[in-house]
Length: 256
Image (cartoon, rainbow, N blue to C red):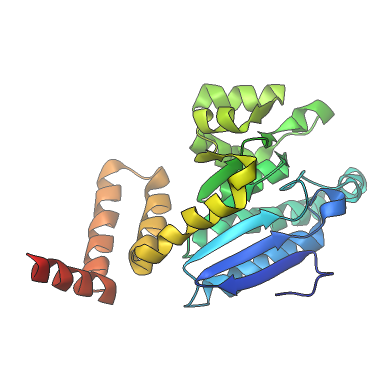
């Protein structure tokens, strides 16, 4: 694990890479160091063949409250070039989550707001504690949640996205699941245990098949039906040649 004074902690155990946002006194608010640390550790997990799944959590009572006050002050006085560089760093983080070969699961306790909600929804799966709150309040300070909009629009309907983005209302965990922003609601008292049990499911499936599925799922997002099928053909052939698939077919035939 990283040193306890690090803004991001990292631990690998039994195929699970646990990445923890570690600014509890700041409600794990995003800043340059936190974003850089997340990107470095996602790359580290991506390159580790022993890692099957990545679990993203927040230390303390909240998952992530968005940008911290210092970051907002920086935005208000920065030049166009500086703001472009700053925004691009966050874009790179969202892209990295999508391109990491392992599934990335956000375990959301407390608040996941603004960029924090974007960070959670950028993950492949979202598990939300019953008491958690998710939302995009940026409009209330005259800001536009522009990059996270691309993620939200792929998670919920157009009209639901418009409502969330332009009113800035928070959602309960149950509302987030109903809207398509989260996968599961878990009672607070059993949250850690049930998250672990959910994550353990990836130990029972093929990691190569999961990686290929993740890549194809996002690849076909914005292409035509025919092109999506052609991408599926390529992935189908690649999957057939993997060791996991060949061994799986052999086991299946033996049972028959």
